[in-house]
Image (cartoon, rainbow, N blue to C red):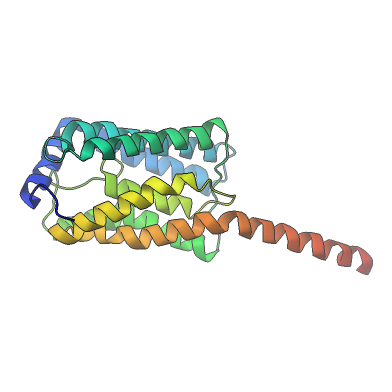
Length: 230
């Protein structure tokens, strides 16, 4: 799919955007850290707070980046912005209003992969961009740019410890397909992590409920035996 802008125009949008929203980048890192600390500590409100943070990041990316800054060089960004805003509202509905999202750091393969994905979004992603020549302010930044935000989202979904509504996967997967095309066209190497992150996040989200149910089933089977042995 051919994109209607060149790499210089694309990176110049980030430069103008980053300079206009400063210090929102620092706030985004702070929100991401807050979510991870609450999850790691097993805080009882970790699910709701994390969902609220994801909702804020997705709505911000949709309105501030896509619609306000990206749409002048790519009219399709108006649609992308709507997609991101709707995704943010879905996180708000399922995660905050209905409290259907819960996260946990464990020794499971999905959880470990999720933690690595989160580290990629927050630390490795900007480092790759820097060495590829996409230094600040020409760089997509954590939490305020669509791709690292999507990678971060997949990392969190991999930490889910209860069934994740499948509707929450639609927008991140669609954006992964769209953005990967641009990454391949322009050599935005840090965005190559989108596809692996999508695999990790989708796998973790789809398996979360099953793993928990399996654990409960094993507990129900073993309990009678334990009682009989007693």
